[in-house]
Image 1 (tube, rainbow, N blue to C red):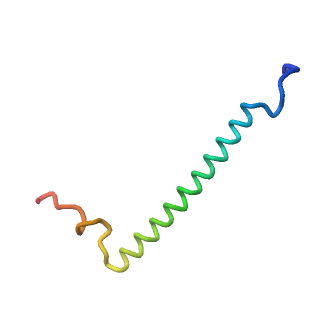
Image 2 (cartoon, one colour):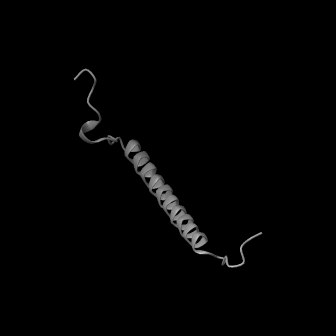
Image 3 (cartoon, rainbow, N blue to C red):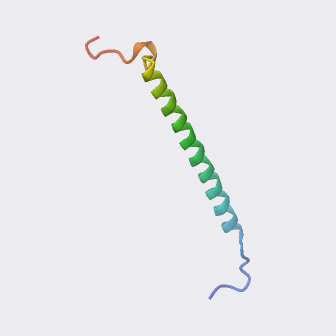
Length: 62
């Protein structure tokens, strides 16, 4: 049985709800950024541009 003086929604509920909203927003922004980077990499690859600076990673033999 719940205590009679427990208010709903309470502060813990409000804090958790805000954290969920922030987490969802962050996840959506990260997803959008990953899609943007993926498109950029595909465009660079299609045009023959190196994906890494300085012509790519140095060879193991260098």
